[in-house]
Image 1 (cartoon, one colour):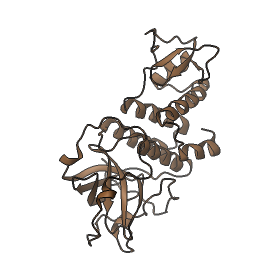
Image 2: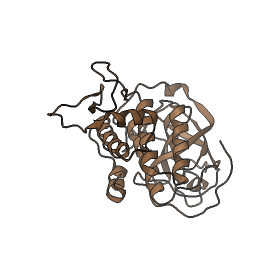
Image 3: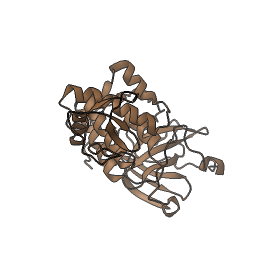
Image 4: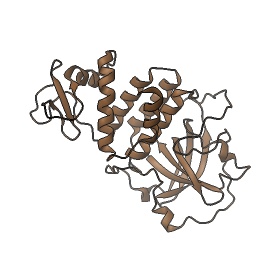
Length: 297
């Protein structure tokens, strides 16, 4: 990961998920805090994922980890002086870490545990909520501003709600980094988000094939109209269908990640909204609603 610094100091707006404070220092305040109770170890954050794909990693084996690339997705207060951070790491997936003393006025962690900044992270412990032992800002990404910032919060909310804890997704992590970079460089937000949404469903194992009819195995034809069964994939549309209708060309374009066609952009927006709502069990996405209200995404 590039270690170049970012020359900005302005604070970003508070995350709809509840962010930690802003800054750049890397040392952890090691003054003791009260022990984490068993109940807290078993409790997910308020943004616990709806779906729980099978985990590829057993947390009991991860006693001590150092210098792991990661990003803070969301954080929330714990007791008077600490935070619990939901962190997305490249090799360990989504991990919950208690940052002891992070809320103290002079804690250097207040300036490190920021969203959308590449970090080098270390932790220890066997429980579901481990103890943060090291966090260092490594730089390499421009800051997110304006609509890109809200889109970044949307990505984080998707990851918090759709990724199981301790389920490694290195390809998705790399896609997340690339997506943040694209947003920071003002690439078209709707297209960037559609590509990430599709990658997320693929990586979590719930994305059906866009080019083959799930029931018949027939190849999708560009000049036909389809509806999409979230569990089985596309099938030819019938008059009684209430699901969004999608042109075969849109499905083929999405599989190729070709969003040049305005019809593909519009239909893919409604299709991904429909699929995400299904896999979230109907739970609303706070940032998605804000994006719809502000930008009609």
